[in-house]
Image (cartoon, rainbow, N blue to C red; front, side, top):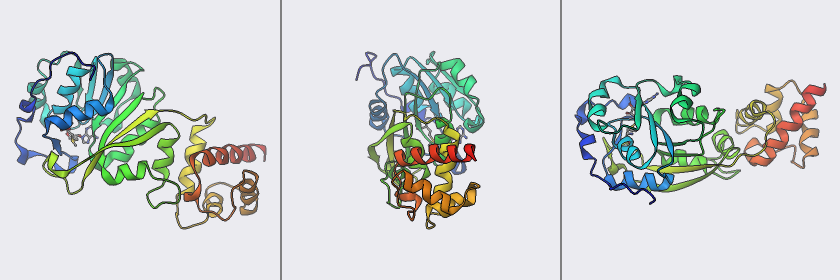
Length: 284
Ligand code: SAM
């Protein structure tokens, strides 16, 4: 660990009434100091790093981040947590908490505080894990890395291989920009209140593939997984104004069996497919 500051005991951030926590907002707070330290390690946070956190909660992870990073910007939707957060972060001068729905947050406001070079570290509200990830993937200034606590099942979807049941638009969307791994599995007992499912820390490192039209690529991937049991050409012909025969020719031209289902394609094949499909539509 590169941080030179001494590590303190942060349990005073846990000074809240657990009975008041809101299940509907995914309020499962981390209570284990070693887990907080492990997340910082997984994220490879250095004193130069600016960090975006989503879901301040009682401020436990925020507080640890403020000790290890240069600057921290944290979003929390639940204004009733303000007094707890103020206490927990009273001496965290490098940290700003914004009481706002992160899904409504503007990238320019985020960049204004932490700049374009930043990392995301968060114990995410599980009910909106996927929308949060897709929102981050759409940023013009993409995070250098994204280290998030999520349901183990989401982690398995993120690192899934083609043709497996977990493989889907989330896997391909992330793989097009980030190298993904499950850094650690986390038991339910590490949270208050205990979630019903086990969790994991997912670590994503920015490693983009060259994609000329990302919106068209996203549309192609979304279409391919729209009805998983259908052949790829059926899904694509329903979404794009292109006949099945032409789509089969397009697939053959990039050495893909025209009878495949979308889940058989890897990220490179989706990139090739979206480029040639776009060209065909433009040239029509
Ligand atoms: N960071 C804390 C921790 O690790 O103990 C709390 C994490 S808790 C899993 C997720 C937090 O996200 C909750 O405090 C919840 O209120 C907040 N949250 C839920 N939806 C949100 C949203 N749309 N925008 C910002 N925060 C949200």
